[in-house]
Amino acid sequence: MRRAAVAVATTAMAVSLAACGSAKESDGGSDSSDSAAKKGDDIKVGLLLPENQTARYEKFDKPMIEKKVKELTNNKGEVVYANAKQDASLQNQQVETMITNKVDVMIVDAVDYKAIAGSVKKAHDAGIKVVAFDRLAEGPIDAYTSFDNVTVGKTQGEALLKALGDKAKDSQIVMMNGSSTDPNAAQFKEGAHSVLDGKVKIGREYDTKEWKPENANANMQAAISALGKDNIDGVYSANDGMAGGSITALKRAGIKDIPVTGQDAELAGVQRIVTGEQYMSVFKSYPKEAETAAEMAVALAKGESLDSIANDKVDSATTKGVPAVIVPVVSLTKDNIKETVIKDGFYTIDEICTDKYKAACDKIGLK
Image (cartoon, rainbow, N blue to C red):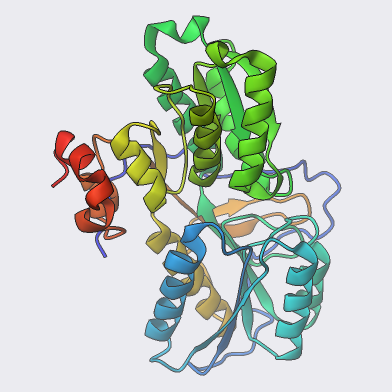
């Protein structure tokens, strides 16, 4: 699959989350091959994803990881899949089941990055390596791959300021951040604030429970009630699903033609960008992230070094020096749909430009 051109350079890759002064589980993967017995291609990979409401997990991540594991193991490797449906307790149970079933390695995208720590420790104690996927879970993680999340927030904030133009300093926005249980959400927020603070007035700001669009919708209704429908000039939304929930509330209140950000390049989000309801999204190469997670998992399961895969290190609150691969991101607007999601094979023009959106697609030359 072809890769989209990278339009946004990543910041320094040595990402550090919480302060590590009290960390005891140091050096999370400095030589991951030492304690793992060498294995052949007949490996079992546990894949634990956090929810099935965001399109990326079932549409992109799961099939791409399965495909790459098969490719790297001569079709002998098995992927055992579990989806937690946004339930941290269920995900912990799923980890226990993976341990009982003696998987060789786990790829975990945590529902709650703190709540998963105990289960990660149990896997570690059972000799099972763990790759933190997309979110940096706590506990003795052996490897990590994600995007530069602070840069994602900066990219969104910069796009919003660009859309507001010269009126930014006199504008008031609503910030719709992600879930407080997701460490990525805190980094998106950090990046956005680094760009927006002092440049625009933030009228209301929310941490949206479970990233759910319906919760974003309720938050936006509260913001409209508090600020007045004529006093909202833009919306920072941390992802496309929440952008959709926010836009529904804005439209119901008669507010239109204001810029709204997003992330994930979901099909519905791209279609809203085509019509102008949503200003932008952040396009992230899920194939690169998924393939990297699979490469890390297979190497760890076989007792091989990650030196040829991971060129960075990250620290969590519990583990230092975790081998990492950080994937760049791109600002997606109506002007570069062809060069991003279409070029990278995410969607075809026919998928985006259905009858409902054909006129809007024609207007921006998407045909």
